[in-house]
Image (tube, rainbow, N blue to C red):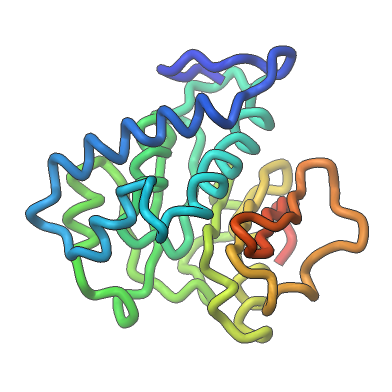
Length: 220
């Protein structure tokens, strides 16, 4: 995969700390540029030292690491790799994906998130925004190489979680990945495998059970 950032290859390993440092740069840049247009709670999401971002400091770098390592053998330019961020809001992660020159589409339900002009803010950064329900995504099967759902499903009931997982896998290509993280495992324990796959993470961070799960695409 041809990126505008030079990261270690699989042989050298992708360091989460290096990814976190780069994420911090994106966060500072965007907050400086858009601060006057953002609500206080949105501004807090760009301060990676704040309490609200304690788990994001591992979730966002870990999620991107899965894609960079999986796509390391890709010969396509990164802008040809289509990624989907489900439940995006206006957060550093979505903009960070675009900084890597991925072709990014963001989805959120404006009936729940109306505090900012998401289409305008994301559109100015070259990101396509779609107002949609994660339970019924308006995309054809296998539309994206990689899909993300970061800290969304732990706020949902089991039937909604199952619908979101099904839709995320459906719109992801069979050879792609659907990457999910949660910052509380209470409602998602039924998703956690008895024996996690090598890239799955289930741990306790800051006293909170957290998890990152990698699903295969192409199954809905």
